[in-house]
Image 1 (cartoon, rainbow, N blue to C red):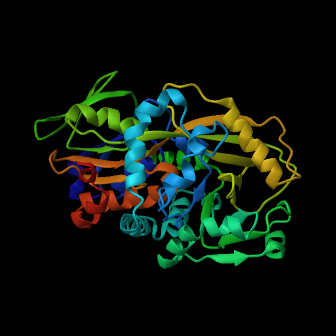
Image 2 (image 1 turned 120 degrees about the vertical axis):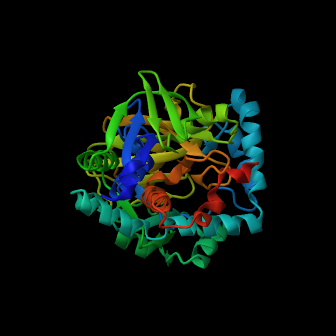
Length: 416
């Protein structure tokens, strides 16, 4: 340990991002407490697709997004849906989303995501080895499937953007697809393959292993719900339901709940839940070797340690609206069309709240007007991918091993 031991950090949130932050901070010698009302890794970190998509540097809002998504937004079965009762609430976020789709801004976002994701697969593999579960992080590549050339052409802007930012991509024909993944339907005749991408084969078990390794190193985990936080005596007071906690520094990593906790401090952020679903099939009757994306339906099929996980869709609706069973059922239908031998044997359904900002960038780094408060949230669909480097960056910066300028592109100040 070193002089950082005199600095106490409270991390709010025990998802994969908060866990990576806490683990990295403890390795730098800080005294660390993690507060979350739920078991570590039990929210989005439990139900995500497990993909480590370091090549996903294209933001969700690409040039032409308004034209391509306007119809989808109104269709209940589409990959992107806003229910009528939520339109007024979602409108400011959607306006910012469309506004971020200019060519210049897209290039800036892709550059920032490339920086954050560089080395993500390798760093996750190193972390998995360090905490005793090396087999849970694999590097098998990622396959994006298209029915025909016209469908692929619609996405070529995203693929060219990836290539400009150093992502290795290979175009495959129908035979190459079947050689790689025999279970895929012959309806898909073209694909883009990213061979350097990775995956986590059991996201919850991986998050649990990080938490256990952090505990063994001395991180204190507290089950409590944070109600508010405020500057206090040169540090921070964190008010929970059960008790009050004192800390020199606070890292906000509470996912979609971060905005609610920051609002009383005068920080209003356009953070929305993009509600994602999955079906998990324990005995799918087929085998695939890597994450597969059916591009026309925006559906992921991912082999897991136990079974197959089918995930995807974006649904707005906030934190209170009940899950929409039909959204999950549509995932299964799309997967069966793409993998004709798939048996949907008693799948389990899950819905989680992905914390998304309209420009597809997370909020990272210090809050300049509130010394001692740091942010690590808003990774959207790429929480697993961005988690390990987020943890390293914040720990290194707090240990004075990384300049704060690294965080300028991700600062919450961009929304003011």
